[in-house]
Image (cartoon, rainbow over all chains, first blue to last red; front, side, top):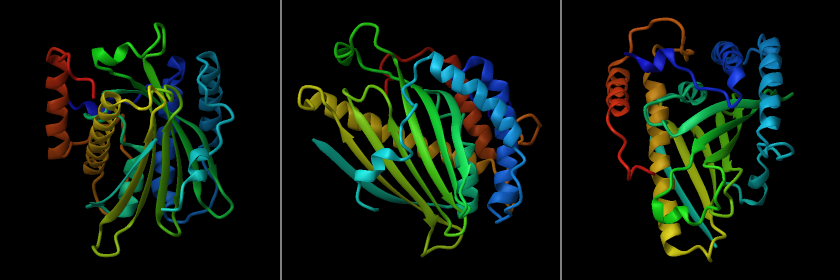
Length: 82
Length: 210
């Protein structure tokens, strides 16, 4: 039983897990083969990302998860540089 | 009152592997308390940095004595935001993680910076800093100690989870884990999977709340 290979994390939106899996696979491939190597050609994952986001953003609203409007790295602003 | 921690660790993998594993570390045998994981924002900037936001939902396991601090009906789940910046030119990954809810009880913020080690080849230096504060009863001692113990335990689990993901990446170049194909697992992965399987079949220990 090799759990790490056949289980992916669930999405917070129960209906979104398959879309998440599809996006994650696309992203992980693009990240290692293109992004890290400095390849700046287009991102092949925009469509799967869009579908996944449509689902997960809806779930976030439905569950009242207080993430909307939270500034990127907001709490880092008042910290000294490491 | 804010408690501040910092430490440094050497990870015996290249920065490229560490950054690839960073996206693939869930699930792992040490993350059974993490229930869901979602990327909710991602952008490549004009200077080729990758900005991402991940939303994690974790169980909030409390000892019985601490449960009285929770109003009846309060969510048992903790939402965690993890914002990150991957800079492949300067070869740094910076992450900032904090909890969105239960902040009155305890607010935990952590900043991690992953960079090439300057001293050892094929090694990544991780610098972590954390800020922990609580608004309850002037940060009473039992809550403080419980919170710190759990934070440290979670840090250990997070490192083990990252190392687990790293042990599954093979070869010279970073790879993605092909979740739907069969690949012979490394020895470490087999051991970890056995541990996970036996933990899943064993009865739950009531004290396991960290």
